[in-house]
Amino acid sequence: MFTGIVQAKVKVSEISDQQQFRRLTLEVPVQLLQNLERGASIAINGTCLTVTEFSLLESHSWVSFDVIDETLAKTNLGGLTTGALVNFERSLTFGREIGGHLVSGHVHGTAEILAVSQSGANWRVDIELKREFKPYVLSKGFISIDGISLTVGEVTANSFSLHLIPETLEVTTLGKRKAGDRVNIELDQQTVTIVDTVERLLAARNP
Image 1 (spheres, one colour):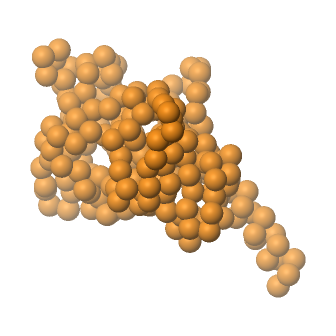
Image 2 (cartoon, rainbow, N blue to C red):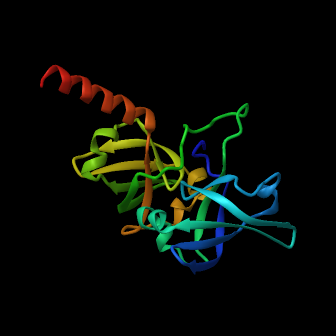
């Protein structure tokens, strides 16, 4: 589990294609890898990945993941290139403050950024609203975009908006996003559960 509070933007240092998976290696500040173990979970652009190897050398600290074809196809990780920046979050430690909302790291799919506009220090991002996501994207509800816990702004028939503060733009990759880019979407699981439960109950009452 994660909180959707991104700890850092980190760089993709190496991509190596293997049979039916891709090895992804990231340069990560050594302080973010303290007490790490092989098999641990880390969210990269909101996608929960399993640590396969890592180095804690001050001069060269890094972490590697093996990403299967299904994950590459379903998320924007398949489009990464060497030198790209990604959002990084270690898994949740209970007993610490949760500043975002609970995020599983199981991405529901990707969506296209339709427009990015700036008003003073704040930015607005409009993202396509796919038909299958419509019942679960509600104004003032939670959503995870590339692993970032955000509050939904306006919702239209075909899009929804996000309003980003300078801190979010500085700490995450969203400050560099532009129209046409694809982002990972994780819907709020509590909203999904409630909506699906209500729909089943209504269907049962009106067969």
